[in-house]
Image (cartoon, rainbow, N blue to C red; front, top):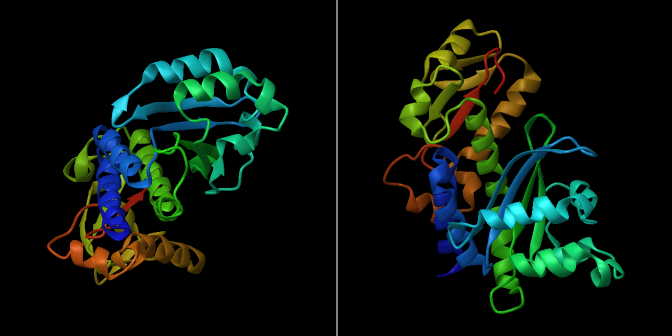
Length: 282
């Protein structure tokens, strides 16, 4: 599979998984195959020195391996030298597992010498993303298939990373609204979070009850000729950036647009989804 085809397939799977948590294993299995990784783990936590774990999922080729998570958190996490370094990583920067430990630690650390080899990630990659409300999102990719990372596959991984981040943000927003797995139809029926569905041109297709209430008040967001807009100039700029990121042009070129010309898909190239909180926040 060429990199552009792989990229498009991964994006489609990621944004389907953002709406339906049950599809996350299949989406990550596709990513593993495309970038040449042997597994992945997703961890979401909040706080810094005394971080609280909110969510963790360890997967290998689309299969849950919960024992890896239990083993790590029960035995190694309290003494893992890499933890504060991962917390301090710049947003979206890929770092090799070995680079999170000093030369001496690579000789003596139980995590580096026992836990990482057991889980198959001593040659893997870590990345930290910013999350909502001070949350931190940590994504770990397992060892490269074949023993070494290939440059073309690393380039594909770097293209995918912003979309991994965005799909996780959508997941967290839906989890906060008790709407995981609801799908687009379920989201439009949800009364805990405002949802606006846009077409590929950015025009409003549908809005659920809470979103309509926000738009009709017009004190934060409103729609003009079926186009979302914001009252305050600063909010308008931010809204346009957010919507722009969700539309086809941001997805990486003509190949992506051609693939999805047949019809809209929620939170993907065919349609963007904007989740609006009561009070006008999007």
